Length: 148
Image 1 (spheres, rainbow, N blue to C red):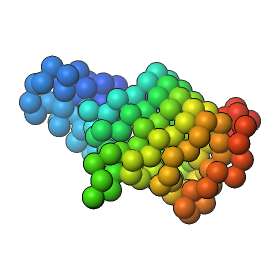
Image 2: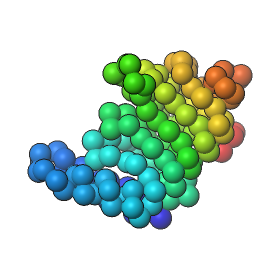
Image 3: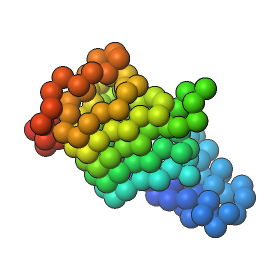
Image 4: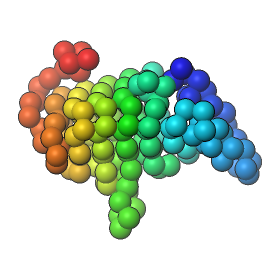
């Protein structure tokens, strides 16, 4: 079902890049209505993006950048703060557990696992496991395939 969410987002993205008014917004709200996901047409993402449970409850800021081979579980928020313009940038091969929040000008490295309900507000280096509130690196030198 998440593939349908991504297909609808791609349709909106097509019209967004062609600067055709109204249609990108229509597809944004279609995703919101059908799947309870906010996945704007302006989001840049890589190949093999997976949205857990059809993207249920996922909120993604319109300027977020998502790398290749990422898995985002349900109820995840990727967004900015009210006083800072920058938003998260995610590397490649990332797993974000259910309910996690990545807020502000955060850069997430490659091959990172973020645990369920973690709140990430600082940069995360490559090959790390992050858990807790606020999110802390508890293990380095990991491989995503060992956890997911």
